[in-house]
Amino acid sequence: MNGIEVTIGSVSLMCSVCTVTARLNSACSAELCLDRSSLLKAGPINYLDEVVINEVVTNPVSQKKHLFTGNIVSIKSESSGHIVVNLSNGTGLDETYVKALTLIGVDPREAAYSVARLAGFSQDYIRIPGLDTSIKEIAAFIPFKGLVIEENEKIARVQLLTLKSIQEKLPKNGKSEAQEAFLDADGWLSFSITARHFAEAENIATEKADTFLSAYSSLLQYSYSQFAGDFIEWERTRASANLVRQNRILLVMLRSGSTWLRDFSLQKPIQSQLQLFKPALDLDIEAVMDAEEISQLPLLVWNRFRDSDDYHVVTLGIWQIFELLSSDIELPKRLTREQIRNLSSRIIALLNNTAPLTDKERGLIEETARKLNQRALMEKLEAHLKKIGVVLNEHEHELLHTFREIRNAIEHGRKPEEPSLQEIKRVKALTNRIILASLASLKSNKAKT
Image 1: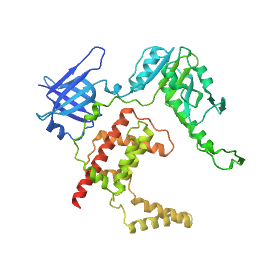
Image 2: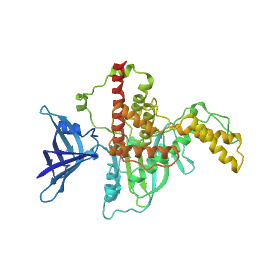
Image 3: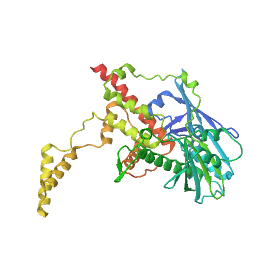
Image 4: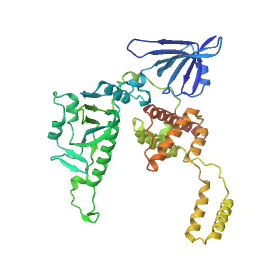
């Protein structure tokens, strides 16, 4: 007997109807028909999770035959009580838009690799025979606004270029819309970096540019008369300067002369069709608007970064939200006040046998002992989730663990391991689910009072 197994993230379902359509030179698609009751029994499913479809053959021995892997495009209810799911294996690429990219003299293999990386492919899954993976010296040119550069100036290893100077750097094959957009700036940064590919060079160059512009803006805004013991000249107009990097970059591989000019500002698909869609969620908006400020704060914080794909912004934002949501959670104390006093007294007495402690040292020990009753944010968050009826699956726990590690790295001055764009989307979807459940609980609390 054969059956269709559908795995969405960490949830597996059996499906009776499945149609997979393969097209030449195009993304494959699939359509599933699921039973509504079985879908609800499976618990919450993240629609952004990857979907794997296998045919399960049980005769003569149990084995699986892979049919399709992709992402959900739409999921809708039918009057018959069934759920129709439409999928595509090109959705991940469709969600990443390359707004404008100009390549001159770039090896086709390098172009294919870097564009694939921009589209979201992990480097572990890209195999291009003959691809040059050696480290290359690359000149980066990045436009910014906030301070008009009238003369070329060098600060440390960064060159500040005028409009005339940057025009000389651009390809001489005629003006294009991309070049015109690149020239819409007050000045341009120029510096050298090393990288194996253009996609990697973009990340390195933009990070260095952001660091420089932030540091230089701070110097321009310095408003005290002395710095490092020396007199500082000052102009009020420069004290309000804020140098902002533009979302465009020009990269030139110095040895080959290969040129990469890209506009990486956000571009979203036309959303006219989405305007017809209204979620049928039982959320009391009036209760939310009338709630106390502490209940509204998570939603206001969420609104500041919901459209961001910057993992630094997203990480700090979601943990700020979790702190706010868990602020009223009181967990049982591990130790009584008397137990804490006894513990600190025993520690002080033990250490005193080795060398007499100062009053300051005794105070530090007592303060540390009192902190034993402090509970970790994850413990308080789990209590809050239980309170609002949200149950996380193993995959979601792992996702939160990943972003907790990122947060810890940021807070302790380490460079975190960058998550994938899909992980960023998924953790935002999970955060949104927690916020909605928290807001929905306001209605039940309002009814009780």
